[in-house]
Figure 1 (cartoon, one colour):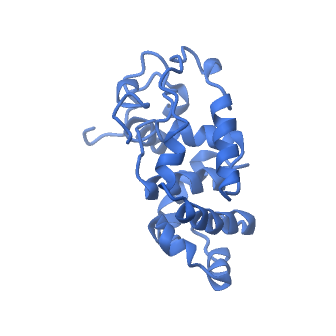
Figure 2: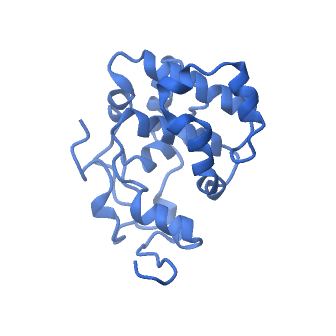
Length: 196
């Protein structure tokens, strides 16, 4: 991008307000994430975002990664009450006991999936979703996200309502909600690669 400030290459207006959003939009949002660790991280971050702005999570992301052992589900699943206390004292993350406990429970639930988290989540990909033309065309949830949330809850996951599930779908490329004409759109969504 050169030596100057980051410039958004986007038609997605939400992404142009901060350098962190520009980088996230242009390099990550909507690009397919198909590995269990990557999906567990995104699911955890989306849950921590609930009730907060996404920029808060982006700015604390490296702190989250340090605090949660790189979001390795095996490591997080072994956390004890001492780890919860450690995380509650860590100012580099969002200190919410319910969300911390959910992240630990979700790591355990992910490990209990016989076919893995990626197989479960990617079963709800929607490659046929129409390209949104305006921000008003982007839904907050869909039937697919409602069904994904139900499947995750049935598997023991917490903090996974249909809105959080849809944000996960957007972030991890299960749907492509880059606006029509956005230069990032061809690199995003389930059509960008074969996920499994």
